Structures are given as C-alpha cells and as structure tokens.
Image (cartoon, rainbow, N blue to C red; front, top):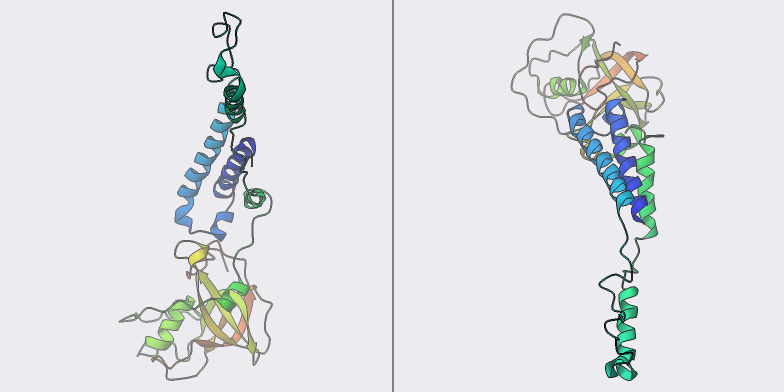
Length: 278
C-alpha cells in the first residue's frame, strides 16, 4: 500500500469517526455514551495526521540519483584523462555492482493486498454503519450475573410497575418480602426467540465499555404468540410462578398480558428504563 493510499485511509477513518460521533448517535451501537469525547478526539487526530501527511508529501522532493551520495566519476577524479587501475577489471566490476545496489537498494517487500480491506470499516462509517447487536448475539451470549442486593425498597403503588429486567430478576430471586407476587409490572426490551413451548425472551444487551465486552440480561416470556425477533416491546404481565419466590430457585419469567411496540430507545445498551416515551 503506497503512502498516498495510507494517507487517504487515515483521513477517511478520521472523517468517519467524526461523522458518527458528532452528527449522529450511531456510535452508541458500539460504545457507551461516555466514550463520545474520546471518539471525537481520535477522529480529529487521525484526520489531522492524514492532512499533515498529504501536505508533507506535496511539498517534499525526491533526492537525485546523481546527488552527492552517488559515486560516479567526476571531472576532478579524471582530470588527467586516464583511468585508474582500480576502476577497471575486477575493480570496475566491483564498483559497478556497488552502484547498482545503491540505485536499486529500496525495499521490494510490499504491504499484503489484504491491507486494502482496511478501507471497508473506514467507508462503512460514512456510508453504511454496521447494525447494532440484537437477538442473534443475545441468543449466543452469556447472561450477565445478577449482583446480590441486601434490601429492597417498597414497590410504588402505580400499576403496572415499571422495572428494568435486572430489577425484576432481583425481586424475583432475592426479595424475601415477595413484593412482586401478583403485581402487574412493565418491562421493556427486544425480542429474542426461545425456541420451545411458544416462549421467548425479553432482552437487553449491556455494554460495560463497548460491544466487545457486552453481556445480556433476559426474562422469559410466556404468551400465545412469539413476536418477531429484535422487535422492541413494552410488556405488561405478572410473575410466572416457577420455583420459590424470593429465592434462587425462582425463575425470572413473566405471564404476558399485553405487549406494545416501542421505538428503540437511545439508551439501548443499558438496562435502564427507556429514555424515549413509551
């Protein structure tokens, strides 16, 4: 890969990062919101490096092969018009070989052609960003361990009670007061097919830092129909009795009474209540 192409790659990558971080919320598909300033700085640095490399190349000069470092005979060397002994015979052959090596001493090892694939992610940031993680990933990922919580505040009197998937799981498995028993709750997430008994999962994917370290939290749904995968829903229902409520034997599951499609929230890769109206 020649230097002009490397320069173009730097500039494209920097421009792509600035585009997704400054003018869209696409970056939230891949990293947490708190990393936006770092993306902006990284994009600016890459773009400036590309522009600087282009400017430097445009103003640079290539050294002449007949410059001071190239050993050709000069007028002062042959002022008497006679050839030196060391310039003929074996000496000439040696000198010619040295000159040839000097002229052709550049590195012939090129960059592998696969390096051109680096343009794919650079251009995708500008024209077609990769889709966000969804049901395909969630069905194959490990569930995020639910932390132990010592005490629980009383549930509000509203009905249905809005809860995150993590809060619902904690209430089912750890709340000795069994506050969720018989209570109507509302959970939000996207659909991950379960593949058996018509059950499916309401899911959230959680980023600790970025998509590479994502984990999932899922609650089993029991209903007569399975919605399409990756559909974002607000689901209302009651705890599906299985196991002893308030202990680890209890299953985090819901008997579905109502489902309502919602827009994919801005905070899609957290397990928080949606920021968008539902």
